[in-house]
Amino acid sequence: MIVEFDCTHCGQRLSVDTLIAGQQVKCPACGNLVTAAQQVQPPPKLKVTGNMMFCSKCGQQNQENNFKCTSCGCMLHGPTQPQYVVTDNTMGGLIPFKNARALWAYYLGVFALVPCIGFPLGIAALILGIKGLKFAELHPEARGKGHAWTGIILGTVCMIGYALLTLLVIMIGASHR
Image (cartoon, rainbow, N blue to C red; front, side, top):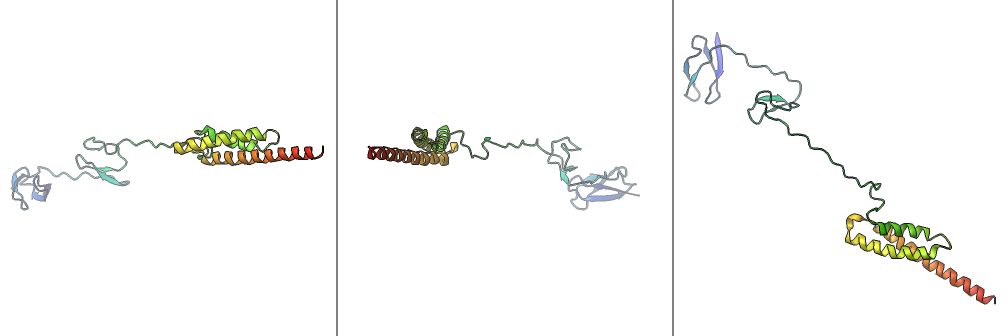
């Protein structure tokens, strides 16, 4: 019967008769003396059910989904890193809640379209729009340039429109006297 073993120096696979088992033999590959194995030991069979990986500490083959090495207990995988999703709850950045001046300018500009209250709201929209635009320039993460510009434009158009309408009414009233 034959006993197989590996050379402890070079790793060469050696085989000897069971009569020589347990004695010193010379490795034909490296020339060093090696003690022959004493009994027949079949290599451990691994049950392969998925992808395999090797332990970085001892070299043992392990299944990829093992957390620790089956031989030495070394951790094969580090702890999973949590996935962070940063949201600012603003419908994808549509509402610039970090730039309140621009947001107020926008709403005041829209409500400045309402007759009778439009002139003072237009003035406020223009002033807050300019301040909101300056704030957005200094703090780009706050956003709101579009809202600020909308407030500026609507505020200006409403102020000029209502001022011209008021002058027109005064001129018509003066011409009828």
